[in-house]
Length: 318
Ligand SMILES: O=C(O)CCC(=O)c1ccccc1C(=O)O
Ligand SMILES: [Mg+2]
Image (cartoon, rainbow, N blue to C red; front, side, top):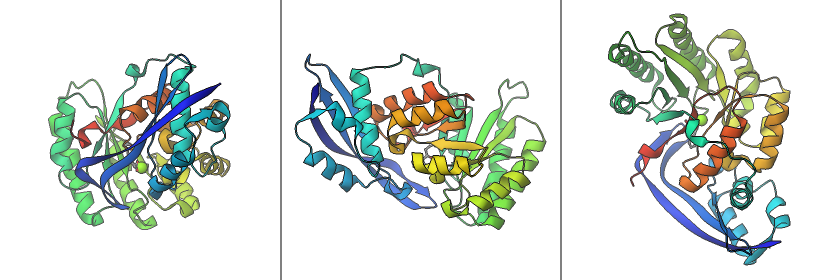
């Protein structure tokens, strides 16, 4: 059995550049591919690399696609090397569209909306809340910490005063530092988070994501012991080898999984079915094609029903 293979690179500008502790991101680049079977059915896939998270680069992915013949076998799809994790996802997704293995309803998922770093968070959160959002993630570790904690207090105040006392559902707020904090700064943030969570009010700080760099897992484990607010690993668990390693080293809080750069979905499913980890599935700003495949994986593997980090469409026009 083999498939006809086609691919097309794309570029998609952000409405406003995404600011994280890793820098500014203005343009999402990737590759849309399709496989056609003998009956003429088409399966779509997307390669959306994120090299600052340790995946291959856009160039690596393009070179890989260019050297493939126009007809490829199943064997080719399932033997893409581990240093091309976004390619593994893209090709396997297209294959799975042609050979579906589950029919779960991705419309049942709930979403976390991504809020921009800095003061604009104060207006953005409200617009998204008025559209029905209940879970938000705010990027921190970008500006001076005193300034950010100041904005954080204003955000908490804004949420508290906007909610009606009869609000049925809690607002969940996630903080994502993208490795941008020091140990001391992480402690400071977690003190603020613990105070809010001790209130047991209508706002819950759901977790602090990747406060420290990936070589500081020991310190992040220490933060888990010291504070009651949960921590999440993201950059530290970008692929299967890293996930395995952090799991073995005793991480019990949350794991952020970005299916589009994680590598083979088959291997990811295998891991999650053997270890019931507390996972948050999240986007890497892929288009609807990659999102659909990633959300299918999420709906199959979600044990704790946490909101998925795919509330990102407001970052693009059209
Ligand atoms: O996880 C989410 O809720 C949104 C997606 C997100 O934050 C993200 C998107 C692209 C690259 C990195 C990250 C990140 O979580 O650090
Ligand atoms: Mg993150």
